[in-house]
Length: 290
Image (tube, rainbow, N blue to C red; front, side, top):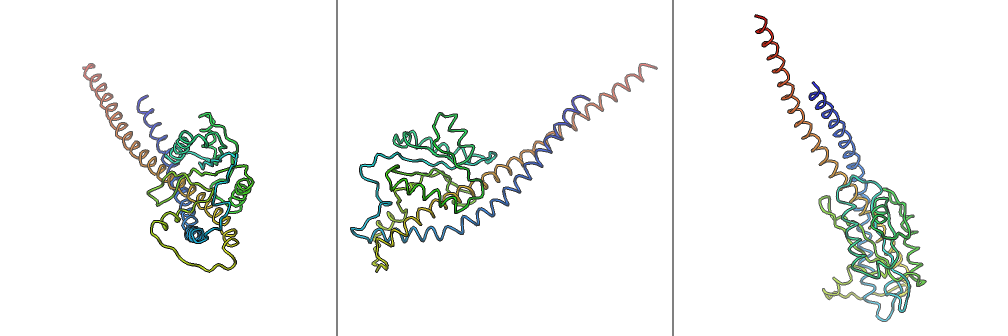
């Protein structure tokens, strides 16, 4: 009886776990749908702004902008911003981002000797355990606000232009599709539009007439591009976190269901053996009385 009672308790516990993971999967699916919509909606604006800044930077000639060039003779430190989650149970999401960040810090001495900022409690806990000094921890949550990201980007640009920092990198998870996310390192400052190199290889050069002037136009577009880029990075990180948690909770739910079925079979066999033993004892006792 003790064995069957123990198995029944395990079946009940596994059932409770399955209900919890199923609920978490449904919540993650709902959050993923909203976050994906926000991330996909902002991509056309960001990509168009990338292309415009790239073409504008190529056609400027002798005109330059401080945000496009590393400050000469600057003694400022480099800043590495790492985006992780506040909560766990999201599969390999945090592990992949933190491995990418640790590789960057190991391979780049200037990054390891600079400032390390982190978003998310999981990243802060890991970096503390790894002995990495965190200069600042940002509390963003899973609903990113453009005003918060804009203020953060403006602070980085102000520190960069004043020479306090010389470079800003962002380590995060890039959302490509629901089945594919990649940990990436993005150089935010000095700003390097990703379309610039591709267009240079293709040899496409367009001629523009700038109104207002090219320098003034670039001065307006570059800060907007930096803010839009950082906002897109946050959106990609959040949607990647939700899809990772959704997949992890689905796997946990399926595993709990399989374990429940296996325990049910074990319980039925134990119960059948117990009934057989009881019948054998009754028959043996009746035969002994004859």
